[in-house]
Image (tube, rainbow, N blue to C red):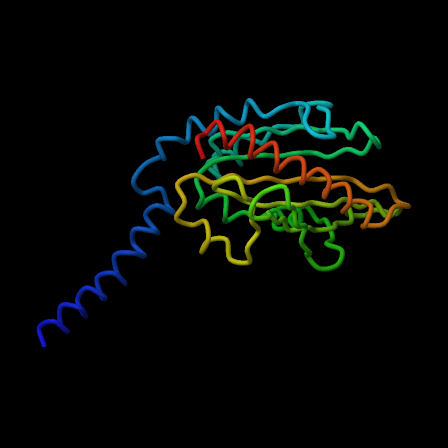
Length: 222
């Protein structure tokens, strides 16, 4: 009888304490992760040339109000061009606290700017990491366009070398002390179909995942 009572009390404590611990980490209740500064500094060393891609320019940085709201510890925003075919991709890479970054998926931001989503969200799968990584893929039409101006956005999250885009990211990443978030964007010509843009982002994601694993995660000791 006593043994059963002890087990019941232990189970109740686990059900009460475990969610509290996860929520505390999620909300950063117990302070900033000690490696956050190192992770933020490491992003600055992300290469300007890698795989098939060459740095073109620094893109517009994240607004200060967004940095504060999302508690972004470090970020880079760059445009790259493919040396083989001249296609371009904008890269936004961030690192920070998991809770705030999870709560602001890109599809909310683009919808708030009156962009119209075209079709359903799909996936890009990348096998240059083990296990394979995945990205959510969205197609948008710019507001009030008369020339079929569209752009594609792929995004994903990671706490290590493998990128993931789960339906419920809080369950997978909510308790992580450090979270990376990446967003890739390419613009279509009015005559191009979405498959063209998807192929561009697929190539970039493959090269990005490999260099992130080799140059960022390896130096972080992950």
